[in-house]
Image (cartoon, rainbow, N blue to C red; front, side, top):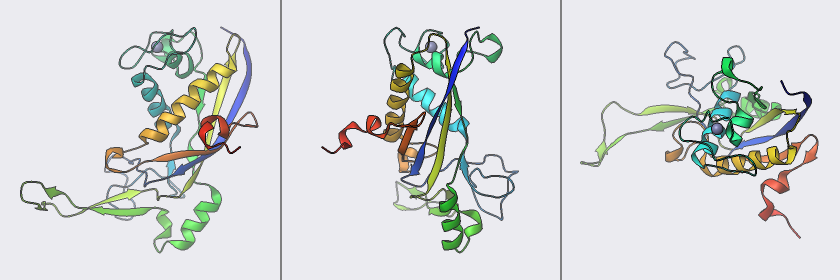
Length: 230
Ligand SMILES: [Zn+2]
């Protein structure tokens, strides 16, 4: 096993640009009759974005984009387990019991920022849910009329809501921190272009990273170099 050198904290704000939907899944989770509920803290009912969603999405975006860096090879197709690419290096390789090295990235759940949580509770008449309910109808494309089954009510984290983003990185002997930074910034940029959660092709789930820091150092300008004012 390689020696652990240190932990790096990557902190920031994940701003919801268009309504974000990470479904609670399973009919057993019923909240006050809401159709299609999103994932929430079981006691407070405040929505959050699970670290697993971010990890899975960022991993698959890097796999699909075949991102390659320096001594690391290109990720293979599908869920990569080559052990030589940036995805396997940072996100872990293969099944946990076969892993020869610890996963470098530890994604934390992203809660709604406290001030936004309080604001939402105050502003929304049904503030106890901290979300918007978007009503959608299905159209029959042949007739141009509203399809059967009535409208669907889609629960979403509202546009403009800010979440606390936190990622802990294990830096092991032989790891290059600048390479880690480069891979992650690349993945964040693709995520901003693609989106997170369900129904992104229908306008849901656009997100943006703000106020990003790496071990206390501001790296927002590295994420969006074009936005730097001179
Ligand atoms: Zn790989």
